[in-house]
Image 1 (tube, helix red, strand yellow):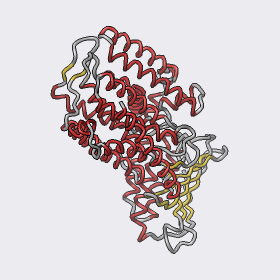
Image 2 (cartoon, rainbow, N blue to C red):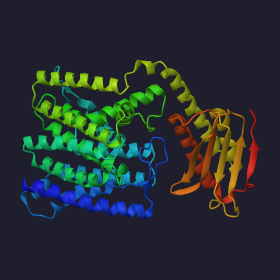
Image 3 (cartoon, rainbow, N blue to C red):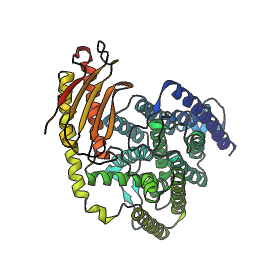
Length: 495
């Protein structure tokens, strides 16, 4: 037990120090999460990369076990499959998250790495072979063990990543999952898994000191994906050592909130015709803030309470009989259904306009693909402008401007400005400016003005425009050496 406390306090201390150092360096070097999207909850730039503190805090006491000649250290080193899986897989996921936080990684790269790591874990013995069924006989997966294990690992990694939307939320959710695994490990006398969870708990709490509302640093993808990876891997080991009839249902219930939020996001985006990996403001924490009119901190505390309930049910499932487990699951299903109805997910009134919204979203996606394809085929900056001009008609703009800064093109003291105007509405102007950036360098901006009476941009329109802006930045960066255009060019656009 003393070893567990030592591991906890070492990871807590290391996470505190590392998070503080990273926060200060991120502020000095401009590694900030900008409040430049309608889905952002924070209103000022906040340092990211706090996940470095979590990763360092978790590995610090484990690395010390390689240097200390003790019974626990020998026991830890003897489990080469567990050590290799956590150290190698964790390092790869942490590097992937760090790269995504600094440079930005596309969905293909992230999923490719995550699937590769999950397959590696399976090869090392992290396997889900049986699906428990409290209502009947257990299901032996057989050949489906590999895909189910891989989907579990990748799913949990991204579930923690998706729920990282409020100060302290992802860290708190992970802490409840860690607590569940820690209690189960102690109840079974598994010192090694308890040690891992003690180390991760200390790392999370050390980070939460700086991340709880109002946060002074975010964990970023480095932290959220790493937490998801460790919880997914340890949950597999915990379930395989369970003698109950609900083995795999225990970790599923322990991570009930992020799993539920992820499933809702997948269904919602599929029904509304949105890209599966697009971000929105329809997550459970967003709905709590809007439907129940809760503050940022109150929303997080309510979700902590929900996670606590999931933890209690998960622990009860571990010690309950099949009949008792079935009753617990039915009770949780009723409770979740009531919560979903209260948050508006089961609102039949909204379902009536869903098909129309889906058709518009599919049209927006097609339109943005056509524009980005034309942008990438442009042979000059004038060609890039010609490719984006159709946005004015498609979105009902009254004014559209594409501006490249002076620093982007040497020799043009005022930069380059392409502008289009049209008669569209008579209301007060509503402007949206999207930065044209490649990596950390800002080339210019895409300005769009509506006069149709709106006071906010639709999230689906924002997604389409972000795709266009990314394509413009990518193409402009390649055209930079040979770009020539007249500054201040005005193009009249007629309907």
